[in-house]
Structure formats: structure tokens, C-alpha cells
Image 1 (tube, rainbow over the protein chains, first blue to last red):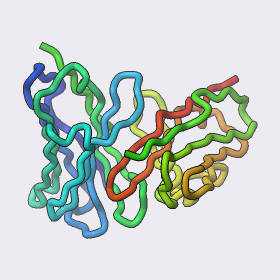
Image 2: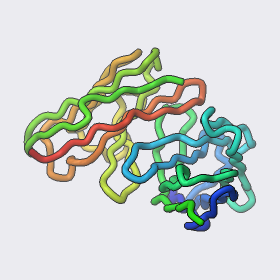
Image 3: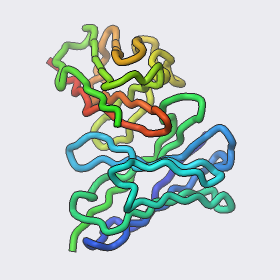
Image 4: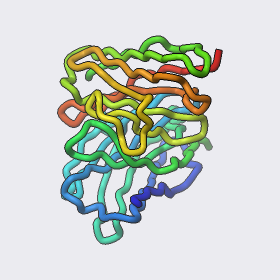
Length: 120
Length: 107
């Protein structure tokens, strides 16, 4: 059974770069039928898409975050990563990684989420 | 950006009743519309994809309908575990947006 697990620092200082990794187990990230994505949820708020990546490296980003976001993939480690630069308190959220089948519009497998707080 | 508007914001019902949740898109998303359930402290769970297809292991009491700009999630015969927040989500040209959510609470 495919599982996703987020990892990374739980506390990031303002103006620094948030870095998270999603490790995929029980399957291969290089499958041609899947994209991989990052979603976040600010405290008490709804879900917000950050961006998605194909194993080949093709990326799609939320326009509101595009200038600060980089998503990359490492097929040798079966991982994909998120970097969000120049963070502020508004970037405090639970960050989820997920899988997006290319043939459907939904996200069918999610990580458990990791809380990132931006604070000095 | 395609905006998804969910209604109502909160729905108060009793176990056994039927729930009808709405999601309206600011422009057509064809059938690329999904629904998720989220309990407090948990990741969202995919319920419905492509507007009307139940995801793996989702009970038959959950059904989705609609196309274009108007979509509905129906839960027939509410179970105690169904009380949660529900989100709709669209993917158009590989840009993804979510609705703001509907909270389904016990009356």
C-alpha cells in the first residue's frame, strides 16, 4: 500500500526558507501515471494547493506562491521536496504531500501532514 | 483562477438524515471536480473524483453529481462518522483550487 511521509523542521524563522521532504513508500515515484503535490492548511482555515510535480521534473505552481516556491523530485530516493523562501507568519500551516493520478482530478493518497510554524 | 464556492458553510443534521452539499465553480471545470472529507487533526480523504466516481473503499451512501459549474455531494443516511468538514476541489490546466469547505455538524 502506497504511503507518503512528510519530514522537515517544525520551526522556521521569518525571512528564511522552509524545506520539506515527502518520502514515498510502497510504490515508485517514477510511475508515468502520477503527479505529486504539496497542499497546506493554515490554522483553522481551508486547504490551499502549493504546487505539483511529475517525475520527469515538470512543475505547476500556485500563481500566488510561484515566486517563492520550488518543488523538486529525487527518483533515486523516491522523494520529492518543497522549498518556500522568504517565509512569514502567514506561512504557518500544516503541510501535506499527496499523489495526483494523471487521469483524474483528485488527490488519492495523502501524507499525515507536518506542522510548520514561522516564528523568531 | 477558478473560484469554487461551497454552500452552505455549515449544515446541521441528525444521523440517518440526507445531506446535500453544493459546490459552484466560477467557470466550467468540465467533470474535473473532486470531494474530500476531513476530520479534525486528520488529512483529507478523497471521496469522489471526476464529479461522480467514488474513490476506493468509499461507502455507497456517498454520491456526487454535476458537470460544468454546478456540483453536488449527497450523503444518504448520515452515520456518526460522517460529521466532518467537506471540501470540493478542481483541476483545470493543472491549476488546482479548493472550495472553502462545508462543516457538517450534528443537530
